[in-house]
Amino acid sequence: MANLSYLTLVGEKQGKISEGCSSQKSVGNKAQIAHTDEIMVYALMHSISRNQNVNHHELVITKPVDKSSPLLAKAISDNEIMTTCDFTLYRTSKEGISQPYYTIRLSKARISNIDFVTPHSVMEKEIDPQERVSFVYETISWDHMIAGTNTISNWVDRVQ
Image (cartoon, rainbow, N blue to C red; front, side, top):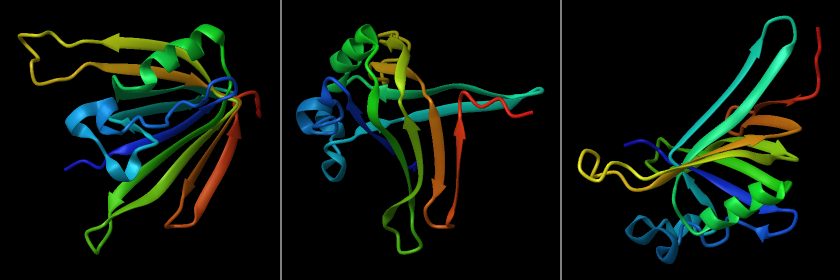
């Protein structure tokens, strides 16, 4: 089984956007009691490329429609800065326990795009409504907590 990732999100204006997002009220029978105040992340995609200079691209997640969905719409409408935008990836330890092992942190992140996707009700009846949310940021950091490696990169840096 694939391991989920989670997002802790706090907005400058709205505060704790991820609060209660993995609760039963928010996501029904998919509730994650140990992660109540985090957003479930089904998929995370991010690219950095280089031609002559480093090029940062949006970080894009796929998430269920949940309690945060209207708040994310407000955040993009208001161009709200996220004061906390932390992604935590989990894996199964050798003891068989889910453990956090990798974090991605965005500083001064903003939402740049939201795609709201309701699957085809006949062809994709097993898939729940989802959102793809894109973030731009000033700084990104990666931390492999178990292996002890980490780094940081700035979107605005154009080192040759």
